[in-house]
Image (tube, rainbow, N blue to C red; front, side, top):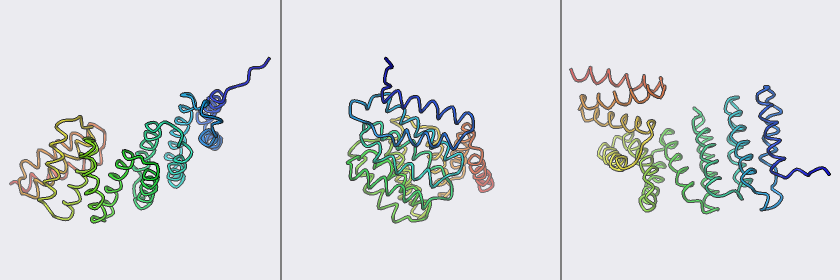
Length: 272
């Protein structure tokens, strides 16, 4: 008697086929298989096993990676939008992780800020409908940063004022650091130095009590250097820019390290 494959076994088999297709550079076939895994409807709640969740998660990441490497930006954005209703039955923490991973991959795209704003608004609307407050607040932080980059400073401030209040109540220190750093950038761009400095002071106060990833620490040091330079304290500004330079260099972010190095030279010239 031939044993009937379970739903999990079927997905695992298809995932292995798709991975082999990627290795053989059969990109079209791989994309089709990954999309089938993602869209495959789970027959019942009993079939939603850890193995099924793993297959859908891995298929999503691998498909997103293909889209990113091939420059298929619209497809990547649509993938992020489409999995929200498709994966709604997954555990909340798992779905939030998948969305954050896809969004972090998408947000690195340069020169497509307007499309990313639309993606943020789509996810935020879904989070509000599904009562996913933590995911919503993370995406709102990114939306505020995008508005800053688009020079929509008033829109960014409106988001940040509401967001900071919520984050303080929920005591999410990591996200509070990120949002207040964006706030400091916005006020600095508006040439409101007192508010930019106050927001940065809050960032450092909270940051002292938690672990800060190197990328975020480099951004904090850069902002500190800019404010010190505006206050004509070029010696202190140089120290911050040097820390920024070393941080980006250690992460092999050569372009950003070069940007910090230019500020180091500026401070040396101005302090003479």
